[in-house]
Amino acid sequence: MEPERQVEIQLGHLCNNRCVFCVSGQRTQMGEARPLPVAPALERISEARAAGHTKITLLGGEPTLQPGFLGVVAHCAALGFEEVVVFTNGVRTARAEFIDAVLATGAKVTWRISIQGGTEAAHVRTTGKPRSFQRILRTLENLRAREAPVTVNMCVVASNIDSVPAFPELVERFGIRQLHLDLMRPLDAGKRTETELRAMMPRLRELVAPLSTMIAGFEARLPGFDVNIGNLPYCVAPHLAPWIHHDGSMTQTVAIDGDDRLSRPWNKYLTKRRDKIKPDRCRECVFDDACSGVFETYARMHGTDELVPVSSSQLAGADPGGRLLARRLRPLTRALRARGFDCWERGAAEIEVARDGGRFVIAREAGPARCRDFGITVAACPDPADALVELASLLDQDYGTIVPLACPPSERTIAARLRRLSDAAPFPRLRWRRTEVRPGRAEAWFDADDGGGAVVWFTEEGRRAGGGYRPVGEPTAGLREGLGHVLRALRPRLDASSMSAERGGPKA
Image (cartoon, rainbow, N blue to C red; front, side):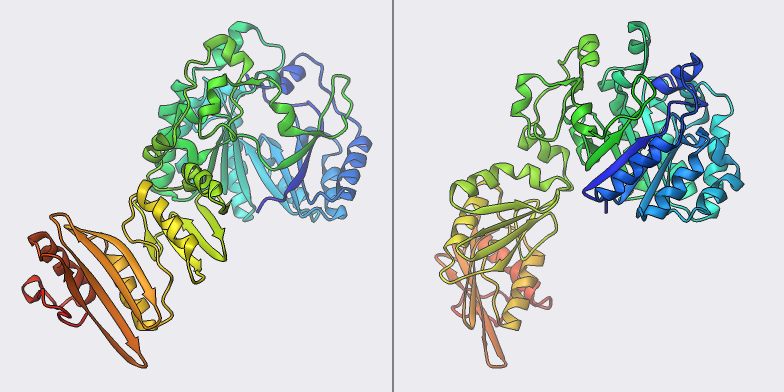
C-alpha cells in the first residue's frame, strides 16, 4: 500500500539517453547538464525524513550518473526510509556489481525502470540510444536473480505507442510488479519546436487500439496485474477507465531549477495540472472529479472535440465487470443522501449506506440480495426496518432487483434455504417481489409473468424446520413453470410434475 505522503528528489539533469520527450537528455546533449554537489540533496532528504516521509524516489535525468549517488542511497537507508525508489534508465544497472553496491547500502530499494517501448525498435526510436534496450534486459535479468522488486515506467509518444501490446510478455518474463504508462507532458519536453511536438503527440483516439490490445493481453496472461495509464481522458476510452488515473497520492517534489539548484518542495500533481484544460461540458461527465483534462498544447494542436461527457448508463456498458461500481452508482447515492442516508465509497467497487441504525453494503460481488449487476448485504437491520424498505424501493425502481432486500434471519435453516433461493435466482417466468422475515418464519413472494403469484415460506421452531408454498390467485401456466424451478432449487429431486397448487403444498 502506498503511503499517504511521499517525496521525490531530482539529483540532476545529467542523462545518457536522448529521449524525444525529456528535457534532461536535451540539456545533456547541449552541454547544459553536469554533475551536481551532493550536500544540498542530502540536506533536502534529511528535511523530508524529519517531516515524516517514509518513501522517497530518486530521479534524474539519470540519478545513477551522479558521483554521489551511492552516498545518497546510503543516507536514505541510515535515516530509516521504508522504501527508496531508484528511477533509472537501466544503463549502469546492466552491471550486476553496481546493483550489488546499491543493495550493500542496506536501503530497501524498489527499482523503477524507464522502458520507453515494449519492443527494442520502439525503445531505441524513443531514447535515441541503439543498445539501450539490451542493457535494460540485462538489468531485468540481474534484478530478477536477486528477487528485487521492479516496476516499469513509459512515457507515451508516437514513436512507442504501437509497441505497448508487447508489454504483457515482457512483464511476465521478468516478474515485474507494476507498469505505468503516462502521456507526455509538453512542459517537461524541453525546448521543442511546434513540428517536434506534433510529431510526438498523436491524437488521443490513436492511442485507444494499442492500449486496449495491451490491457486485453494483461487480462489474459496476468489477470489483476497492476497496470495503469496516466492522464488519458476517460471519455476517450471508457472501457479502459479501470486502468486510467490522473494524479496520485500526495507527493512533494524537489526539482532542479534553471540554475541547477534544488528547489523547495512543491506539490507534484497540483503543479502538473497547471497546463491542462477541460471544456465546460466536462462537468456533465461521471469522471469530472477524477479527470484533469488535456494539456493546453494538445488542445491547441488537435482541439477538444474528442472530449465527450460519459453518462452513468454509458459507463455501465463500458464496465460490465463492475470495477467502477461506486462511480456508476453515484446517481443512487445522491438520491439516498436526499432521503437522509449516509453513503461512503469504500474503494472503486463498494458503497456503504446507513440510516436509522440500518447499515447496508453494496458491492460488485454477489450478496444475499442482488440487482442486475451488483449485490447488497444487510449488515444491520433494526426493527422496524424503514431504511431497508426505502432502500429496497429505490433499488427495485431503478436497478432491476433480482433478489430483494430483507433482514437476515437469525434461524440457521431459514437462512440456508433463502441463500439457496438467492443463489439460483432469477427464476424463469417469475419475479421475486419481496421477502418478509420475522422470528421463526420467512416468506418469499413471487409474481408470474402471466398473472397470479405465490408465497414460498420457511419456518424453524426449535430444531424442527418446515416450509411450503401457497398460490395467490389463479395458478397460471407461468406460475406453475416458475415454481417448479423454485422447488428444484430448494430440493433438487423435485421436478415440475410434483408441483401442487394446494395450500401448504409439498414441504420445501
